[in-house]
Length: 211
Ligand code: ADP
Ligand code: ZN
Image (cartoon, rainbow, N blue to C red; front, top):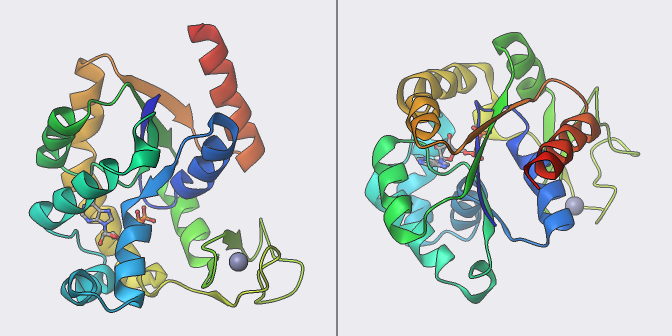
């Protein structure tokens, strides 16, 4: 199955995608993770996008589409995928239709107050990328990943000023995709405000009802 996750920053796309990837046996492809890996490895792409990410702006479409085109050509992506953070603009969505059309678009809905609370408390493992929250999903030991012992850090774009920029980018450039996909009868709304388990089990019910 080819699934796209839509929703504002902090909607829980990454957490949901990790769970869906395990349960459905599909690769979790996050453009944010791919950009952060490029930055960490100081590749040409990484150098181009570093400041853009730190500010919370969107990477230009040509760079983003090229990256996704390459990733979707890999062997593990042939049986399907869960795309997290792509597409984020109409031109990206049009490009995806041409590369490999999506079958289901899950729109994770949460309101702004919860977004801010989630993003400012978010911590990420530098080593394996696992996502924590200092209040709702704390690690067993402060600052240390439960899974791999890696160091937890706050993403530079989880500072309040960058969060505002990201939300504005979402409203202006990404939210129009909700209507775009709805018109194509691909959109599945899902409330993202509960615990990760409750959000995921609501999704499993939707899958069952579709048969
Ligand atoms: P979140 O959904 O929490 O905002 P992501 O990890 O998905 O964060 O993305 C982090 C940053 O990576 C974005 O703010 C943007 O700069 C860049 N990025 C990720 N995906 C895209 C995309 N499809 N188009 C443009 N920029 C992107
Ligand atoms: Zn880890």
